[in-house]
Length: 218
Image (cartoon, rainbow, N blue to C red; front, side, top):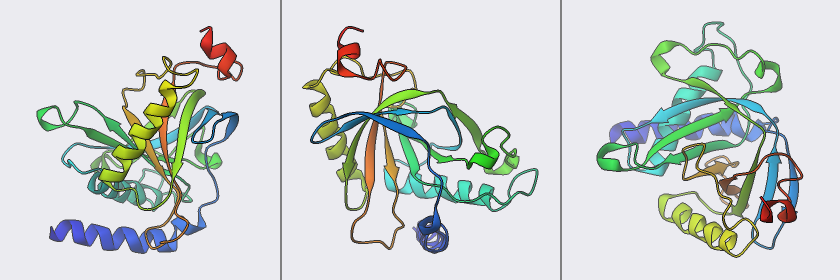
C-alpha cells in the first residue's frame, strides 16, 4: 500500500511537469467515422514497452509500467540520453498471461522521431524492450473521465458492441496478443476534459483495406 502511494505521488509529479508538455504522438489517418467510434490507419512506429505481471489492477499496472518508462526517458539507458515525453501512454491487456490465467499488462510509450530508427538501449535493471508497430488499422472509441478498471471494461464492451454492428464485425485481430488497449492522453490532475481511448486492432492492412467495402470482402 505504501509503495503504491509513493508511486502515485511520483507519477502525479512527473506528469504535472512532463506529460502536459507532450508534443509528439504516433501518426495516423482516420479512414472511417461512426457516431461512437472511428477506424484509424497507424503508420509504422517504434515504442518502448514495460511488461507488468505482478498487478491484477489496470490502474496499478499502468502506474508501475510508467514509472519504469519514465526512468528510461530520464536517462536510464546505455547512452544516458534524455528523451522527450510523448503521448499517449498505452496500456494493453494480455489475457491469460498473469497468475491463475489472469490478465497481464504491457505499458508502452511512443518514441520521438529523433529516436524512431535507433532507440537507446534501456538499462537491464528496468526491464524494458523496444517494440515495433507495423502499419495497421485500429478501431478507436473515445471516453472521458478517469481510466479506472470498472470504466475501461465498460468502454471496451461498448466498442465491442459497436463493432459487431459494423462492417468490421468479424475483423478484430488477435495477432498482437492483446485483448484491447487503453490510451491515456491527460495528466492525473486534469479533472475536466480528460481524453482516453479504447483501441482494438483490426485484421487488415493498407488504407484501402481499412475502408468498410474492402473489409466486408476481405
